[in-house]
Image (cartoon, rainbow, N blue to C red):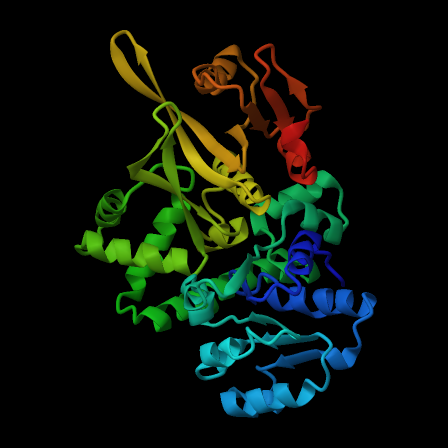
Amino acid sequence: MLINRNEYLKKLIESKHINLVKVITGIRRSGKSYLLDPLFTNHLKEAGVDEKHIIKIDLDQLKNHKYHDPYLLDEYIRSKIIDENMFYVILDEIQLVSNFESLLNGYINMSNVDIYVTGSNSRFLSSDIVTEFRGRSHQIRIYPLSFREFFEAKKLNKNDAYQQYIRYGGMPMLISLEGDQDKSNYLKNLFELTYFKDIIERNNVEKSEVLTSLTKIIASSIGSLTSARKLTNTHKSYGNKELSINTVISYLGYLVDSFLIENVNRYDVKGKRYIETLSKYYFTDIGLRNAILNYRQQEDNHIMENIVYLELVRRGYNVDVGIVEIRENDTRKQLEVDFVCNQHTKRYYVQVALNLETRDKTIQETRPFINIDDSFKKVIIVKDEILPWVTEEGILVIGIIEFLLNTDSLNL
C-alpha cells in the first residue's frame, strides 16, 4: 500500500540541488526510509532522471555489509559517477558506516552530486546528528502519520478513523494491522525493544527502571505544566528510591534527543518573554504514549491537546504555551493559552476544549483571548463535530476532525 506523504516529499523536492547533505531525521519507524524510496526515487524517475543516476544503497542489507567500510563505499559511489550530469546518492542506515561524517563531507563540494541520508539507530535518532554537519546540512524532520494521512490511507469513515487514531496513533505500520491486540503489541514492542534500548545503549543509562518510570509520569501528565523538580517529587511519591534532579534532567534530555517527546516552553504574551520555570511535554505519537500506559488514562482533553500540538508543528509553526497576566481585585493572575503559534509574520492563538456547552465554559476558554490586546487570529478547537463558526468577539470555533483534515483550517 502506497501512503502519500506529500508534505515531506515537497520539502525533499524543494531541497534538490542545494549544496548540502539532506538529513532525514525523526523517530524510528516513522517512515524516513519510505520517504526516500519509493516516494522520492519515484519522483526522480518521473522527472526524467535516468536510473543510472540514482545511486541508492540500503546499508542494512546483507549484500551491502561490505560497504560499512567507508573506503569501499566511497570507491563504489565514485565508480558510479560516470559523467557530468547530476547524480542522486541515497544512503539508508548511514550510521552503519564507520566515520560516515568524513565520507559525506567528501561529496558536499561536488557540483554533480546531490546526497540524501537517513538512519535509525540510537545515534542517528539524536538531534545531534545535525550538529555534526552544522552549516553543511539540511534537516527534514519527519513525524508519524498525521490524522489526514492516516484517514486517507485507512479509508474508514471520519469518526471511526479518529477513534482509532486517538488510541493507536499514526505509526505507518499500523495501516497494515487490523486487530487491536496486534496494534497494541506492535507499539509496546517498539517502546521496549527499540526506543528504550536505543536510549539506554546510546547514553549508557544505568537506571533503566527510572527511565521507564519517568516516561510513564510524563505520559500521565501531557498537557500539564511540569519541571524536573516536580517530576522528581512525583517519582518519589510513588514510593520509588531517592532520585536526583540532575538525573531527571539528563533522562529528560535523552527522551527529547531521541524524538520520543518534545518540550514546549511558556511564553508571556504581554511581556514578550519566555518563562523558564515550568514547561509542558508532548509525545511525538499519541499511540506510543497510550501504549506505555497500557491504554489507561485515556482523557480526551489531554489526548486532543497532544494531537493538536503535533499537527501545528507538522504545519511548520513554532509552538509555545502562552501566559497572559491580568490583574483582578489587586491580585495578579496568569491565564493560559494552550498554544501560541508563530510562522514568519503570522501568529495564531489556539485553545483546545472538549466543548463550549455552557456559558461558564465559554467564558473560561475565551477569557485569555479577550485579555490579549493584539489582532492576531484566535481559535478554539473542540471535540464536537460542528461547522466552523465565529463568535461575536471574532474567535473561530472549529471541530477537531475538521481542523485535522483541512491543512488551512486556521484561516477559515
